[in-house]
Image (cartoon, rainbow over the protein chains, first blue to last red):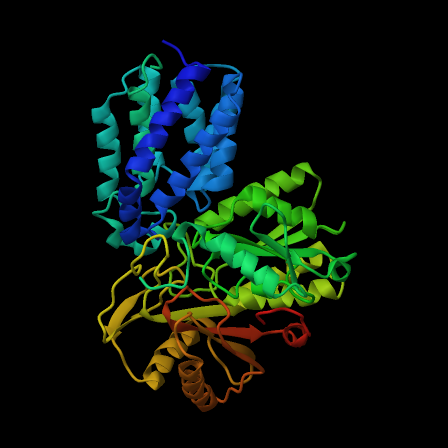
Length: 195
Length: 331
């Protein structure tokens, strides 16, 4: 099984569908610990990604990742735009050498950590990216692992972004960025032939 | 939610268009962006450009401070959401007149990251940039374990000072030194009577009882440090001055600039009443502000409340910069 331009597009379309389906839920998660717009911002971004991939079908994997990155960077805004944008830009760079999703996501995770300054345990998307990149590398990505990583952010104290102003009061809430990242990994599982 | 809008998803483009077309003497829009530049190109020739921006919903900030003597350009993001790097980059390109561009960013993770990416893009074009990240809000502890202090109304004073210095020919390095020197002397603290409602969300960011106020609130309805029953203006002023005093050690031998900033839904009448109490309190400490502004400068949509900014003027020329004439909508 291998990553191709076609199944990459299918994967991104699956992700886009999930974000649009759960747009209100993502914003709801963002309301108590952020500013209540994560779903709207992500939906605007993934819709721009779909438009970009439809208007101009990329020839190479690197172009595909880059198109996804640029659409997200230019449409999402907030903190999620540069973070997701950086993740896909890093995958674009890495895709010149490999099509291995474990390696691609490891590079993406490093980029996200550098851009946002977060580490595991800070209640951010890194709490999903890092353990699941590891699972991908081992070829062991399962929905149960995704759920566990996302749910795991509930008990954490936020150390980055607006949620960090709440300190202990952020405990008990899922991190919205971790949830949307979870959709990105679930979309992979649902894409036939990619894993 | 009752708002004078057409489509909650389209508030920013419609606002920017209305703003620029209402004030063509000050502003022009960069096509295909929500970035706004100074209409008077000649006023920027041979000078360092100053670009700021952030989420929308803080009007007149930031586009209202674009004009001769203040900002060269401002980039308007979605409501309470940082603008994107491609748009910030367009504003940087247009603000560059060969002397580089200085970026004024509020300390929110989104703003910091998007401006950072725009800076990377500008470097590829050999446009020199420097940045100040304003973090004047003393309601939040500065610690390694959080995002750090937020950038709020004091950012407008930074725009004013840097804009005046740039207009008088300061270099990019001069502006960098000036911004670094000024920053630790600007302190702000806010209160909210009612949270803001983001159009796309449709309900207030947090709920307060009819008789409750929140101290230390941010400009995106971030909760503050405590919630109490509402008190007379005089007692609110006492609480805010006490917080500022802890941070700046107010002293009758020093000079201060003061800004009372309305959050959007608080009438000027109440802001002047608060100012009356504030000035009495300062007078008791032997302080008469050397400079004062009262009004809506850095709002938070329809949040009710206000913020108090105190700026210790350590050098006389800082006061000259505050008094320097500008041609803007909002100052």
